[in-house]
Image (cartoon, rainbow, N blue to C red; front, top):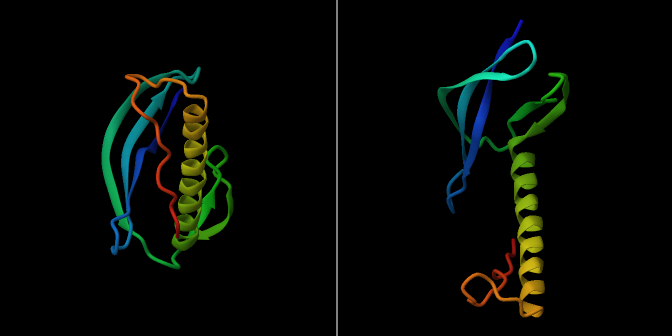
Length: 119
């Protein structure tokens, strides 16, 4: 016996300067057979929600469905911001190492790290 469930296939955070963030979820329904092989993935539309500062939501383990606690939109925003800053710093360090090693990149164009982001 197989099973079906809905999931967010793509999650987009629209973070326009001076506006509250908006989260868009592109949803799909997954159908798998008894062995777990995917039979189909059907688009299910989308869900769009606006950031709600201190609004709590449950933290649900994606594999077990067990509620692990709660978080707020503010905490989610802080985590995403921190993840971006860490990823940007890692990419800048990678590009700086390439530039320092004077390794040609693609068409030989100069590689420069992005300007440092400050909060």
